[in-house]
Image 1 (cartoon, helix red, strand yellow):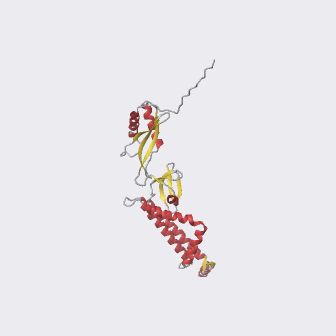
Image 2 (cartoon, helix red, strand yellow; image 1 turned 135 degrees about the horizontal axis):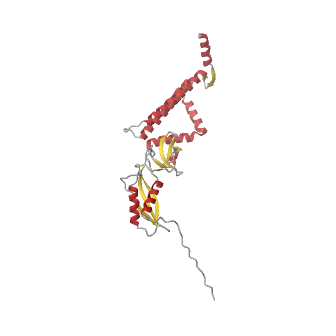
Image 3 (tube, one colour; image 1 turned 180 degrees about the vertical axis):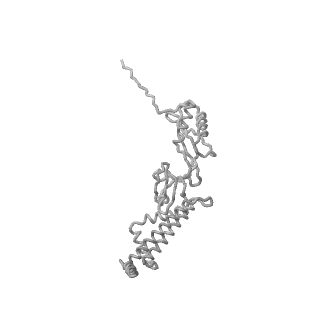
Amino acid sequence: MSEWLSKLYLYLKFPLFNIGSESVSLLSLVKFLAVFWLGFYLGRLFRTKIGRLQTKAMEPENLTIISNIGYYVIVIGTVIVGLSALGINLSSLAFVAGAVSVGVGFGLQNIVSNFISGIILMFEKTVRVGDLVELPTKERGYVKRINMRSTIIVTSDNIEIIVPNQTFITQNIVNFSYSDNIYRLKVPFSAAYGSDIERVKSVVLDKINNSNLRFAREKKPVVLLESLGASSLDFSLVVYIKTGLNEVVPFHFDFLPLIYDALNAAGISIPFPQADIHIKTEQAIL
């Protein structure tokens, strides 16, 4: 038995190839893979546990910073330990610098840029978890998670958009929740000419204030006469919406049925585009 184990050990220690002056054996490869698997597993477990942690003493974005930094510290430590287990001497900085330069030369510029952008986002906090943002492509959603390379945006259709972090650094992003979690929503509608303007305002506001829609009640909604259109009086209902990843946020189309019901019940006509056609006839010259 001992002889068989000795042969197995010699087989595992047999050098397969060389990296520089170091020989790599099957045993060192097994150690390398085991360390890598364990390190990445622990990193993901740490980030998941911290990400799910809920505490009033710490803001969600700070938890995101801690979870991501902890994850990458574990991953970097795993890389160092794994390479050491493989038999590579990391005391030579020339090897590390050479590997990094070759990696960047083969197209890692964007990855490095997104990585640095992610660190900037986490510490600068111009975009935070739970913020309502609008992307340059006009897609709007909530920030679900900020990773080191990308940010996850959840739209109202529950679609997750993976956005590279450098997008938030190099392009114009609308953040509706930057200063506070309240933003203004305008809902346009029209009434026929001849309608009592003040009555239009009052019936719509009464309907909205008595509804179950979720909006900032402390900031009273208003109805504004925006313009005198070609066929109608053009109004806008202005309400203030509380944003947040876990908030049930109404959109403009949630208010339109209430406005229609209010105007219809009050007997106020809702116009549609129309045109008068005048036909001129020329009298025959006798």
